[in-house]
Length: 111
Image (cartoon, rainbow, N blue to C red; front, side, top):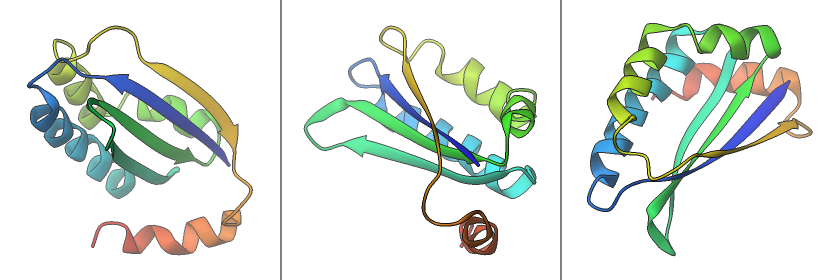
C-alpha cells in the first residue's frame, strides 16, 4: 500500500474551518472509497496554524480515484482560500500494519 503525509499551513484564524472541511473529506474517503484505508487529520501542538493529513491507499489508482471524488473536490474548493502557501507531500509505502491488517481495521475507522 502507499501512504502520503501532507504538511499544510493554514491562515491564522482558519484552522477550525479547515479541520471541519477536512473531516468531511476524511469521512468520505474512508467511507466511500474502497481503496482508501486510512485518512487522519492531525494538528500540530507547537504551531496552531499547521495541520497534517496522513492517508493510505491500496495503490496509485486508488489515490488517483480519490482526486475525482465529490468529497475531495468539495474539500479542495472549500479550503483553497484557507491555505497559507503550498503544502508539502511525502510519499511512502506502508510497513506496519500489514496490508491485511489495514483492510481489517477499515470498518472501525468510521465509529
